[in-house]
Image 1 (cartoon, rainbow, N blue to C red):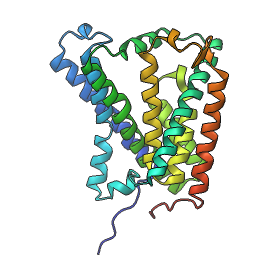
Image 2 (image 1 turned 180 degrees about the horizontal axis):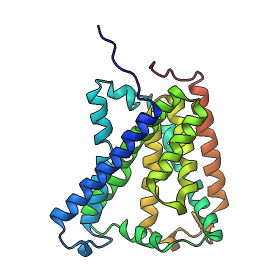
Image 3 (image 1 turned 120 degrees about the vertical axis):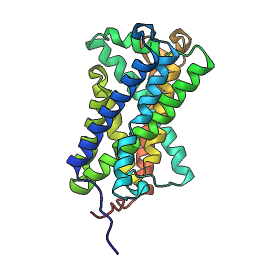
Length: 276
């Protein structure tokens, strides 16, 4: 029986991801050309823009899926679609909530040194929910699809390849760098990179993208919630002035520390990476 080919090499994985982004770019541009003749008509809070975001996120996995299918590889193995015990879902939720709070405060601290760019206000406006359709598109695209797809191709497809041909530390760092670059948001680069390190670690430790996808989705869901809340309503509870309340921040740091330690104890041995 002929042996099936193994994981892609890192350079091959990187090239597949680059091809994936070119594919998404072409698809979204084609959609705009065919269905929205007047590009200026796409307002920042329009259904059309939110639909493009959702389609773009979903399209990212098409090229990697095609690659895996053409080489007759295991989808579950290559994308790290391995199940985890229900308790891991709960711990991952705690990690995701904690990361979101710590990342929010880090963002506020950075804004003291570097003024927020104008496009940040445009993103905030684009993520406002005005109708049930807006909610379905944003929650589906930004929370569910983005978490599953990005974790599958970054912490699964790419990082798993890097783990096989590099040491784990470099694999997590390189995958996080790739994830930071694909977001294309220099102002948020530090936050995205650090969150990527945490997600990469728990994906490696559990040998599954389920925990990292839950953490990713939780972080995005909280961010989406904050974009649609009146910040003044959070004063005295979540916020204290322009910063996260020290009590909330301490709880978040403790939750992050506890979650990582708990996962580390639960998975005492390093996961087995499939042979080449």
